Image 1: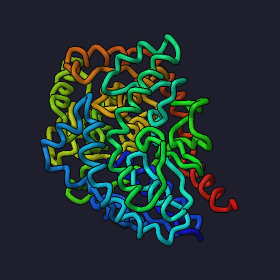
Image 2: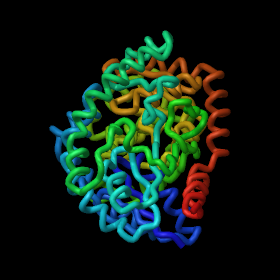
Image 3: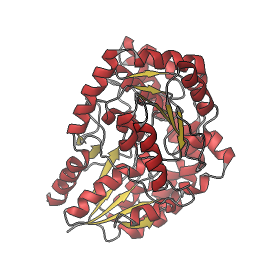
Image 4: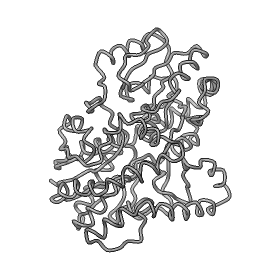
Length: 428
C-alpha cells in the first residue's frame, strides 16, 4: 500500500478525473487523499476518499459577481485567474499542502497547482504532473488556440515560426506573473530555476499523465519527456457540494419522463462554473429551439425549478453520462470535462467557448468532424438555429460522432493512469 496525494484545483471538470483515479487507486489497496478546495469536502468523503483542504477555496467565488466577470473574460480571464487569485494565495497553498505530503509516497499535481512542484522538490518526493487538456503543452507542432487571440490559429498554417514567436512573448510575460513562485522558492531554500512555472515548470521530471484521448491530440516532439496519454478518466456522479443547490432524485425521474415522452432534445449546458456568468446563453438558446420547433433540456445550475412543459425542461445538474447520450445535439462551453463527456456520448455538438482552454478544445472537436463552433460574442438565436439545423440534418456529423464516441468509450483513462502511477511506485 502506498500513500498517494492528488492535488487539484478548479471546477468539477478538474475534480472528477482525479476522483476517478482515486477510486481505482483505492481498489488497488492504496491510501489516497485528494487535496483541493473545501467546497468539495462532502463530495470526496462520500466516496470514502480522504480529503484535505488546500487554499484557495473556489467555493468562495460563487457569490462574487465582480470576480466571476473577470474570471470569465474571454481574453483576460486566464491572466486574472493566475495573477490575481491563484498566485497571491501561493504561500497558503504551500503551507496547506506541505504537511499533507510529508508522509506521502507520491504526489499528483495539477497545472494550476503551483505549490505542488515546490512541495515535491522540498520533500524530495516523487511526483507526476497531470495535464487534463492538450492546450497545457504549448507545442509549436500542435499549437493551441489561445483565448486572448484565437485569430492567431489562421497563421499556424505557415509553419512553426508564428507560434514560436507567440511562445517567446508568452514566456517573457508569464515569467513576470510567476514572481511569487520564484520568491517562495528562495524563502524555502530551493535553488534557482530557469523553468517558467506557468508554461513548463509544472511538468514533473518523473513523468506526466496526459489525461485526455489520443483522438483529441497526439504526442509531439517538443512535449516534455515521460508523457503518457492515458485517455479520459470519467466520473460524474451526483454529490453534495457545499453552497451549491442539490439535485433531487425526483428531478432525475422527471427528466427521464420528459426524455421518454418525445424525440431527443437539444441539451444546453455551461458546465459547473461558466453558468455563473451565463449572460444571454439560456434565453437565446430557448428562442432558437422555439424557432426550430425542437425540444430542449437546459442545465442552468441555479437550483431553481425553471420552465417545464412538453418541449422544454430546465434542471439544475444532471450527470452528463445520463443525459448526453439521449440528446440530439449537445451544446456546451467547451470545458475539457464537458467536452470529454460529449465525445463519449457519441452525439454531435455545438461549442460556444467562454474562456481559458475552451477555444482550443472547441477547435479540436471541430477538426474531428463532430462539432460546429459559435464564438461567444455571436451566440444569438438566428446563428444558433442555423448551426443546429446543419448538425441535425447532417448524417456525416452523426456518424462521425458515433464512431468517435465508440473509440472514447473503449479507452480506460483511470486504469491507464493507475498503471503509470504504480509503475513509478515500483521503480527504484
